[in-house]
Amino acid sequence: MALLSPHSTVIARSTTFFVFSRGSGYRDRHLWVHKEGPEGRLRISACLALKGPEEGNASPSLSSNESGNFRIMFAAGGTGGHVYPAIAIADEIKAMHPNAFIRFVGAKERMEWNAVRSAGFEIVPFPYPALKHPFFSPQNFFLPFQLLISFASSWKILNDFSPQIVVGTGGYVSGPLCLVAALRGFKVVIQEQNCQPGLTNRILSLFATLIFVSFPASVGFFPKSKCVITGNPVRPSLRRFVSKAVARSHFFPKAARSAASAQLVLILGGSLGANAINIAVLNFYLQMLSEHKNRYIIWQTGLDAFDEMESLVRGHPRVSLVSYMHRMDMAYAAADLVVSRAVSMTCTEILATGKPSILIPSPNAAEDHQTKNASIMAEIAGSKVLAEDELDSTTLANVIEEILGNETLMAEMSEKATKAAMPDASTRIAERILSLVDLSAGKSSK
Image (cartoon, rainbow, N blue to C red):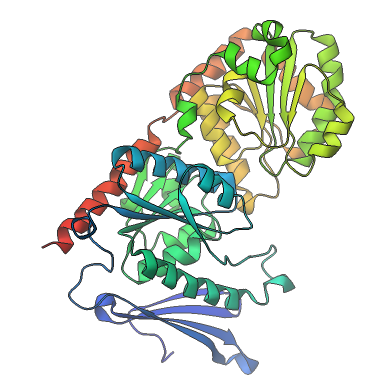
């Protein structure tokens, strides 16, 4: 095909072809969007020119010597599993270099907008392309044009901030921004939270300088020479000690004395909730609490289900019902057992806090990555795994009783989780990122 040069990269999705073409020296880059027309002919439907750095410059970014400080951009969005690892890394970088300039990119409509600002970082809006499942859904008809808008916005955002390095931790924001950054000559690193990476990070791995992975099993999906096994970053608050008594009094202030010596189950459905878990818990919690007077529940329902669950639970004195968990450090410190989806962030936090766990993978997760996460957790932390098609009030109640009724098993699960944890993940990642910034600064100052 005449449009392709030795410097072109082709990504094909169905009948749409994305061709990234660059000249020598990364000076001129073009994004061509081709749609297959009648009789199999290709036609150009759009083109975006990306101007790279002038010849002779190693990078389009300012060096730390020129600006006086590091300039680092984070692309993360959509879910807490993508956003909170990025915040943890940014916190660590700020601790090492308080004058570093850090900017996040995310969508105003998604949870990252408030989470990042609450953490004290700047975030700029981004028109993310909304890929719908299945891929051939009619809702994806305008996806190529949404991608073009995202690529153009990425170019402007990068131009305005001129980062020395771009860190992608996943979500729809990460793909376009990191891809354009790499094609323009900015250094890019990515961080993969799951055991099995998604399509976006597999594509970005071709352009990334380094890839930080959470599990050894993830290395096989990426160029091995770029991979660094670091574990998943956790929120800084989880690394600070909180006593069980203080944590339980936070959730049960009127029963602080009796709760201090009780058994406590932490139910986590994620920020969006998990309907199957909510229904199962709703159908057995009352019987369990009636049979075990020393048992308490902290139950995160998710935003959408909170009102309904609250009306059905009706203020039980040994149930703390929340729509969204703002103090995860308190929740983990209070818990004896965690029941949760197998999202990567929660799995990492279970390891970091050394908690026995029951994992219920979502069957709707992209590429079934939660099942893979749960399988790894069963192996390294002794987690009990329940498939959603096996989940009901009886099976969940039985597994909870199996664990809480066996102190030896609880101790073994806690010990395995603690041994498998990598609590210094954010520190290690921050150090490697800063070393790349130092390296690029050194090159550009020569």
